[in-house]
Image 1: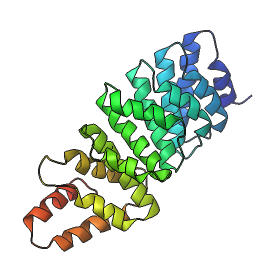
Image 2 (image 1 turned 60 degrees about the vertical axis):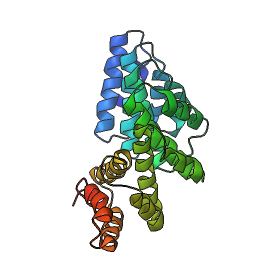
Image 3 (image 1 turned 120 degrees about the vertical axis):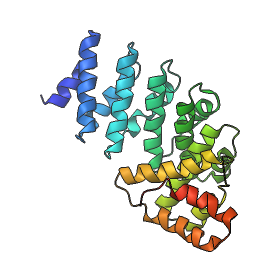
Image 4 (image 1 turned 180 degrees about the vertical axis):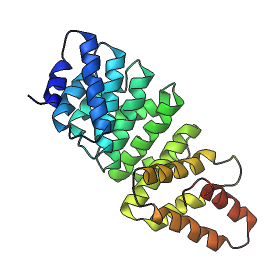
Length: 247
C-alpha cells in the first residue's frame, strides 16, 4: 500500500491526532503538486469531521489539489454543505475551492444557491469576497451574465471586489476584449470604485503568480490609457489600476 492510501485510510481513524496527521500529510503532498485523485472522496468526507481543524485542513487540501490541476469535482456536494460550517476557516477554504472549480469552467450546480447565501450573509468579509468570485464565475460559465453583472453593483464592496475578479478571470479565459475593456472603463477616480479596481488587479496579480499569461489584460488596460489621451479624469483610474499590476 502506498503512502497516499495509508493517509486516506487514516482519515477515518478514531483518534483525532491520527486524522490530523493524515490530513496534514495529504495537504503537504497537495502543496508539492502530488497526484491525489484517489484522496478526493476521502477528503470530501473529512469535511464533516467532528474536529474543525481536520475539516479546515481537508478543505485546504482540496484547494491545493485544484490549484495544481487536479479534479476536485467529486467533492462538490460536500463543499456545498461545508459552506454552512461554523468555522470561518473551513468556510474560507471552501469558497476558494469552489472558485477553483468555477475558474476551470465548472457549473457549480446546486452549490451556487448555497454560495449565493454566503455572499449575502456570511459575517466574514473575506468569505463574502471570495465567495463572490466563485458565484460570479459560475453565473458567467452558465451564461447568466445579468446575474453576474448585478454583483458588480452590489452594496457590499467586498462582493464588488469578488465580482470584478471573476469577470476579469472570465474575460481573460475566453479572450473577450470588449467585455474586459467595458469592465475597466467602469472604474472611476478616487475611492468610489476601490472594490472594482482592486478586484481587477487582484485577478491579474493572482493569475501571474499562478504562471498564467496576463498579456491580454495588460494590453487592454494600456490600450484604454492610450485612448484616454491627455484627459486627467480618464487617465487617473487607469494609472491607479496599472500601479497595482505586474510589469
